Image 1 (cartoon, helix red, strand yellow):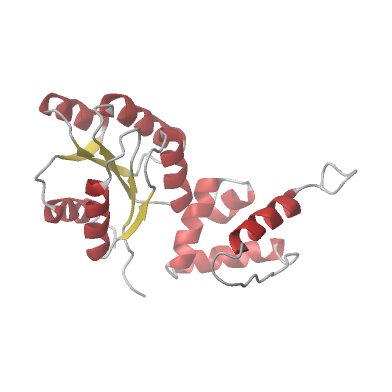
Image 2 (cartoon, each protein chain N blue to C red; image 1 turned 90 degrees about the vertical axis):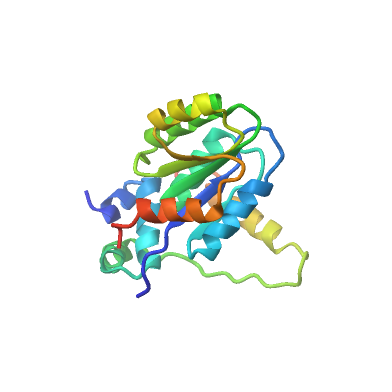
Length: 134
Length: 77
């Protein structure tokens, strides 16, 4: 049997329509041997939590460029908790001001990646988070 | 409660986790299938084929709706 694949949901919550970054990350994770599910644009927190539940994902990558991250991320984290998905690691990419990064990490976000972050770094962080799984 | 028991109780998360175990060929998944097997056996297997864009998904969606509808006069199905 092959080693367990890390399953990642890449999701675009909110109303901004720019998913180039999300697609680049989705592809990088796939190329790194992970199983990636991309939700498509304009998802509600409820849709994302439901997709995470149905797909039994290990991690969720959120892409937010609209500035609504301080509203959307707490809501998603809360819904994950309600659904018994506290074990799911949540990371975030997009345009996130420095002063919000600290608060997001306090809420439980495992990584925040802005413009210029390398896909290699994201892949390594996720691999490391699940290093003891197999 | 084991995953199989949680699935029988209707928990979506347990079902998703069990599917992962089965997909990965883990022994736990195999054991759970043994447990669940007695509850199966009344299913139909229906195949739908057709060219691109001819409406396979639309048909399947409608079939699912139809099959999930309780029979007339029997609200409990």
